[in-house]
Length: 202
Length: 202
DNA sequence: ATGTCGAGACGAGACGGACCGTCTTGACGC
DNA sequence: GCGTCAAGACGGTCCGTCTCGTCTCGACAT
Image 1 (cartoon, helix red, strand yellow):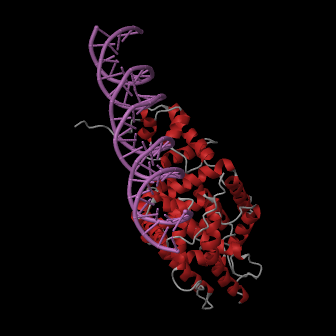
Image 2: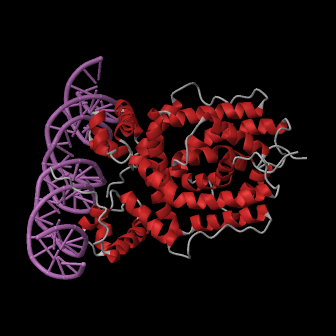
């Protein structure tokens, strides 16, 4: 029984193949849709042997995840902060509007749906996503809310985890479940309603 | 060229087979998971020919949808209303807690995730879901909120569509994306925060 | 009423094709 | 020489279509 090391020997790894695979996966899922995305298709599109994919990734979802990871690490040097003009409501509306436009962009819609689906059905991938992709972005959101909280614009005893869910949850849920059109007005309504609450204010 | 009627000839349809297929689909997806759910498996489990499934349903998702439809139409005579004791906050907490316990129930978790995934990737199925399953439930929610609105417990100019999203969206999104544990405390926090808003109240 | 008959739905499963995940080959680079 | 690489063969599963022989049903004639 050979011990068979885990595939952590990343030294000899071909970086060009890795990038080609991730790019092919992202492009393919957008073109053919989640249901018809296959490892064979990714390998063919990337000009790569199937074994090269199976050697380095445990599942289709893991490939997709790394594709997103590559895109998210690409821009500047790390995490740009959310806008902080002092006007919390305007800042949140701007961010939510941008999110909506990204979700409505056909280049990202299908790939993100695919990743969401993999996360839905794979707790391991979900943990990875929570740590590497959603986590940092979520931290930025909480940071912006904390700033507002210090300025007295948010309740002192507010649970920021819940607050983030209250603002982005409705949006993401409507998008994933196709519960209605994602319009800019909708973004504004969410922000206003979240900030003011459902009860009458006088 | 024979006119060949559309398959609306439901008269000759075998009701026993239909029920066996839907039951098998629901049970199987729970046992083997969404990824390994196959038409062949459903047919075998139901003791039915594959063609009988392909004859009446256009996709695996449609079968799953009908399985949920059968379960939802099973209980009493239609739509039981949401509790209305006059205490909106308590009523909403009770409903959300019940929802959480259902989402945490392993008998329903996997099947509902599967249906959600199909909806995510199939707009036709999403429309059907919105009309036949989510729609009626959503109507009950709005009805309860309207009652509270008339009692002056909710803002007069509140958009009830947005309000429903604000209350149930965060919960469903956290569940689907595995963004954290679904606890009863979380349900309470959502309700309280949604009602009061993020801003300080004085 | 009773018998005949055609149309469909039915269970079963054969069929070609797509993709799975593993394994083998020979070339290349460290 | 050893591990990765591209390429692709391999057995297996499931796809969606199709072909069987059986059955149930309704229409029509007797």
